[in-house]
Image (tube, rainbow, N blue to C red):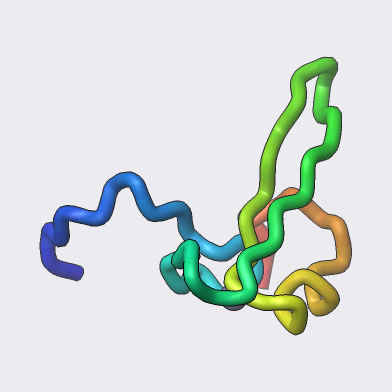
Length: 60
Ligand SMILES: [Zn+2]
């Protein structure tokens, strides 16, 4: 990865692509450990493919 200047662009929770405002952006807000957490998705497909798991550290 190169150091691009899109720090304001969140990464899709499902595919990790940059979530752009002009796409089919979806935001899911859940409460996790007493804190509101917002998950961004680049499309409805990614939103629906997400199983709700917040763990990105799976043991392969
Ligand atoms: Zn995505």
